[in-house]
Image (cartoon, rainbow, N blue to C red; front, side, top):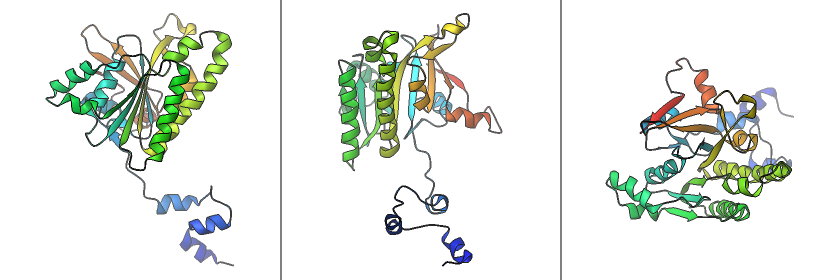
Length: 275
């Protein structure tokens, strides 16, 4: 029988062997996590825009899902291309292009504006263009499997542009909502787990839809309902302006909760514009 002093010295920390003996492989002491597992600094990827980085508290958070949504021609796909260009050269990206809008010339235009070699950027992008929802799901499964099986994988960014494109076409009616929600829930969770376990920043794009209960108010919501938004850590609404700039609003994320409770609410803007 151990004494309270011995217990306090050990803080309940057990070795892997003792865990196995006690059949507690899924449980460990909270003290072990707090005192013996160093808290990792949050790692982020630059978006290529200082204002956008400030909006996201420093850039895209690795291990989390960021959702960009908005109407047509608001810059969602352009942002995805920009993220591939600004990705550090030691990393790789997976780009799942469901709409067929990935454009090498757009990469070239962004890269040459920064005086870089655009063909080198293309070699660091693994592109897939699914023709339907089933193929999109198979590609996500393959991406999860290949990244997890490769301990030396350099994949640090995974983009799905757009997450809802095929589902919107193949599950259009009210009778299809349950089946669509079920499929989306599975694959959003797959992306969530992949990001957390493999340290990957996951980006999905989405269209916006108006809330029928607020027709008199400009209140666009991400398409697909709460299935997608509840799993997304960062939700960014994109809006175009008459000046050709892009306005971004951040809401519904853990980051916003932290800013609301910070001492200086102006430390990080809740909206910003980039040109």
